[in-house]
Length: 77
Image (cartoon, rainbow, N blue to C red; front, side, top):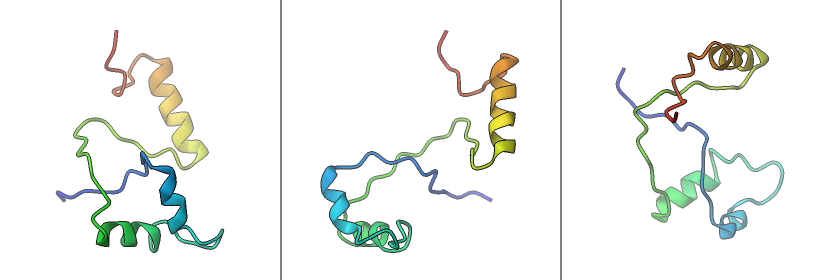
């Protein structure tokens, strides 16, 4: 489907740390929702390549693409 995801990449001001209570704070649930309600979030729509790297399998996939010159994220010469 056509939709947006949170790719997990953020540029933050130090003040955002005030939105995090402790180690048990869920970034997705509490601080992000509050920042959104306060109009403090901006988004960038990236239409290029994206691949998560959450597991060793993901890491190997991305390393393999890079090592074989097939890294779609490499847009520079």
